[in-house]
Length: 473
Image (tube, rainbow, N blue to C red; front, side, top):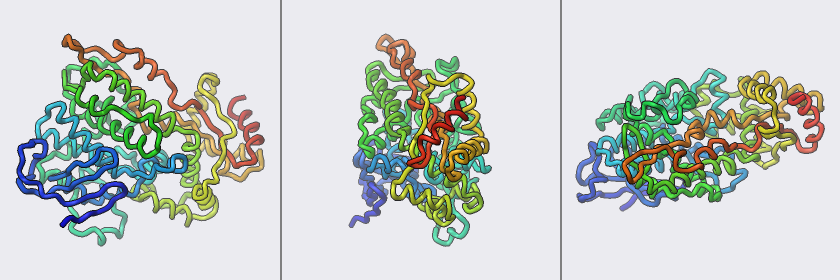
C-alpha cells in the first residue's frame, strides 16, 4: 500500500528499495531494504530520496518552504508561477547528485552536496528576496546567515507557541551528525568559497583569480558557483512555471561535461554550447521574468506595505520565521495603508510606472544619487513623500525603485561569466578566450531601466513632472 503526501506539485510516496547493483542509490546509514521516498517532480521526473535526505524531508525547516513561493508575487504577471522554495530545494538536491556523479565524487561527498543543496534555502523568509532588505534594516539577518544558523542549530524557525504542534522533533545538526555528516562543512558549502559576512560579499570574487590551483573548491562550487545546482534548477523550474522559454538549458549535456581540475570545476569543450546556453538563459530570465517591470511594481508595493506598517508587524527575527500567507494576513490586520496595498495586490489594481531612466541616460552624479537613495531607505521614503505631497498624492503612493540594488542582493553570480573550459589538447582556457559571449553577457544590463518611479493610476503625469525635477535636475 502506498501513502501519498501531496505538496504543491510534488508527490511523496513510500518505496521499498530492494538490493541492486546501482551504487548511486547507496548512501551513509542507508542499508539494504531501506524505505525510500519517491519524488514525482514536474521538472526532473521521478527520483528517490533516502537516508539523510529522507530524514530532512520531515523537518519543519524544510516543510516551511512549501509555503514560500519561489518567485514571490510573480504570479500576478505569469499566472503559473505558484511553485515553491520546497520544490526548488528538492530539485537542486537532485541536480547536485547528478553533478557529483559526473565528477566521480565518492558516496560521502555526493551525499554531502545533496544535503547542502537541499538545505541551501531553508533560511528564506516570507516572499524571499522581496522583503530581505527590510529584515536587514530592522536588525535581522540575510537568508544566508539564517540558513547557516539553522544548519548549526543556532536559529529556530518555530514561532513561540508552535512547539506543541511539532512532535518528536530532531534538530537538523543532530540529523546530519547521526548520518556521519559535519554541519560546519554543510554550512560552509552553502556560504560559498571565499565568502564571509553576507551574500553580497560574493561580489568580491574576481574573474580569473590566481589561486585556481590552490584550495579545492569543487564541492562548494557545485552549491554556489558560476555553474551550480541552484541555478540549473531554478532556471528550468522558473521557465516551466512562468511559461517563459528563455530558461530552458541543456543541463544533462552540461553536467556530463563537468570535471574537477586544479581544485575547481571545469567544463569540457564538448559542453561549451550548453555552457553558453546556460549563461544566456540566466541573463534572459532576469530580464524577462525576475526584473520584469510589472513584477517589480508588485514587489515594491508589498515591500512598501511592510516598511510603513511599523510596530503593527512582528519584530524582524520573528518576521523571518513567518511564511507568505502569515505576512499577507498581518498586513491586512494592520489596516490603513498596508491593508489598501494588500487589496490592490489581491485584485491586481497596481501602481503604474510614470517615469523611468536607462543607465545610459544618467550622468555619474545622478547614478551616485540613485545608489545612495537605494541604500538609505529613510532618505528614499522622505523623497517619495516629498514628491507625493507636492502632487497631492497620499504618502506611500509614490515609490522610487532602483532594481540593480536588488540584483546585487539576490544574484551575485550574475557577474561570474568566465569559467574554465578544458580543451581536447589538455589545456584549460577561460571562456572569454573561446567565445565573445562572456564579455557580451558581462556588459549586458539585466534591467533595461536603472530607476522607476511608480504612483497611482491617474496621477502619472503630475508625479512624473515633480519626480523629474527632484531626481534629475
